[in-house]
Length: 390
Ligand code: KG4
Ligand code: ZN
Image (tube, rainbow, N blue to C red):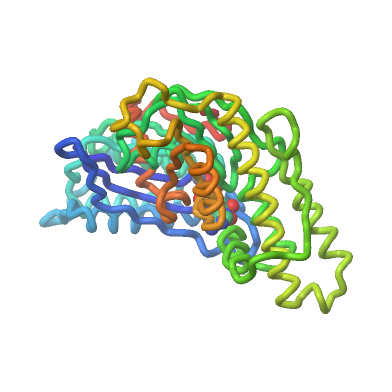
């Protein structure tokens, strides 16, 4: 069984082919094209990202199918029938740059041997979601392959199940990305309860905005993390918003403002010094991780995350009594993983996180989620839901 999955909810164009055979997954391909254009602006402009997705989708699909050994050229180009072309044009009425590329692709290559198509339908940037959805709708229509809509946040969690079918429940998931910061109680695959979330900026957004204030590039997370790793402590202490609040919500916009004030009160010369930048990067990362860690483990304790009835062989670590799951771009952060690993051990819990390239947006996480949640939908019925909740 093979799934072809498409992800375009933000600024990464991702397409993957996942195969399930003999009760095991085989990743046939996972291609991501990250849009460099946003580096100049310190953030993502949805309409600019939409245009880039339109340019990238067909080349990324071609590469993903080629790597999966599923790309087969037709012996001669095949014209698309008039009626079918009309439907394709209707579907892509708002994606005028994508239309000629798709038409050429469909005329050049055979229908690939895949059983279903999966696509992110939310949450995310609406124009970006629509490009991926309309692309998937055209493929579903023309190739007559069923379509599975996927929730992006759920995919950030379920990518952890790629090689770990033995996870036992309940588990506590922390999803930290550029758009979301959510603590999710997971009773089983498909049964989720959001127990806390950010009231303003997301953790990744805070990394990105702090990097912008410090005159560093985009995305800010990897840059700040890289610079912070060069030192082991910082004389600057930034606030830890809501760390002691009696709930599991987060707030990161105050931290961003504190970074701005700190920069403003520092002389121009010092502001640009290597030491100041390194100290600030360390302090920002330290504050974000501290808040995420304290809240997650307080929730694990209060929600009694443990698996009293599971057989030891079913538990990831035989001594562990519960599972914490990390997902989303910020979970690529090395220091965050280090601190979560140490604290889960201390608390006798197990920890799952994706390998770094599967933490940030990619098509494979959409394929894994589609495998576990195969709710098919007719292509005519699928639409974007930018504010979709888990
Ligand atoms: O999940 P993701 O790829 O896209 C969204 O769904 O938003 O997350 C992107 C976010 C960005 O804010 C980026 O700065 C952050 O993840 N990020 C990191 C790291 N790598 C990516 N944050 C901290 N440390 C990292 N190594
Ligand atoms: Zn994401």
